[in-house]
Amino acid sequence: MLIHLRELYGKQEKVHLADKIDISDIVDNHLSISKSGLVHTEADAIYEAGNVRVNAHVHVDLELICSRCLAAFEEPLDFSYTELFSNETPKEDEEPADIDDTVNVVTEDKISLDPYTKEHILLELPMFPLCSEHCKGLCPACGVNLNEEACNCTEELTDPRWSGLKGFLSK
Ligand SMILES: [Zn+2]
Ligand SMILES: [Zn+2]
Image (tube, rainbow, N blue to C red):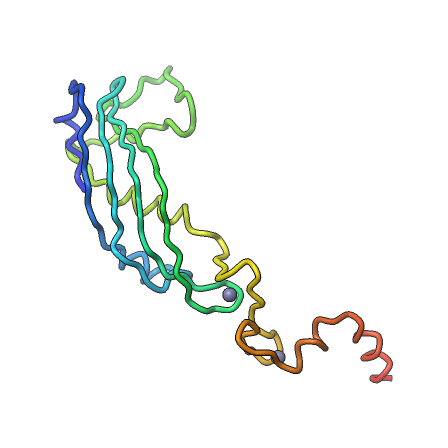
C-alpha cells in the first residue's frame, strides 16, 4: 500500500486506502507462525499539523505453533495502529511530545505502508503462543501431547507426593 505524501500536503480531506499483502517472508522466518492468510489492511491518511497521519486497521488469519505442546492452532489478529510521516526533519529544539507520536521522517514522496504493517504484526504476536490457556503441553519424559493422551510417567514426574517415596526406594 502506497501513501502519496506529497498529494496529501495541504489537503483537508482524508484518503482511504485498502490493500491485501502477502507475508510469506515473515512466516518463513518466524518459528511460531506456521501459516498466514493475506493481510487485509485498511487505512485513512490525512495531513495534519505538518505531518501525514495514517490510521490503519489490520486483519489477518494466522496459524501459530503452541509454545507448550507444539501443535498448530488458528489465531486471528485484529488490531489498529497509527504512524506519522513527514518529509521534514523536526527542528532540534522540538522535543517529540509523546513516544507514540514519533514522526517517521522519510525522503520519498511515496512511502509503502507494508513494512510498518509487518512490524506491527510482529509486535502483536504473543511472546509464547498458547493453543489454550489450559494447554497441558508435552510430557517431559516420553514426549506425548498431554492434551491428546495420558501417559504413565506423568504422575511420577509432577506429583510431589512421590518424591519422598522415590528417595526411600533408591536407598
Ligand atoms: Zn498447546
Ligand atoms: Zn510421559
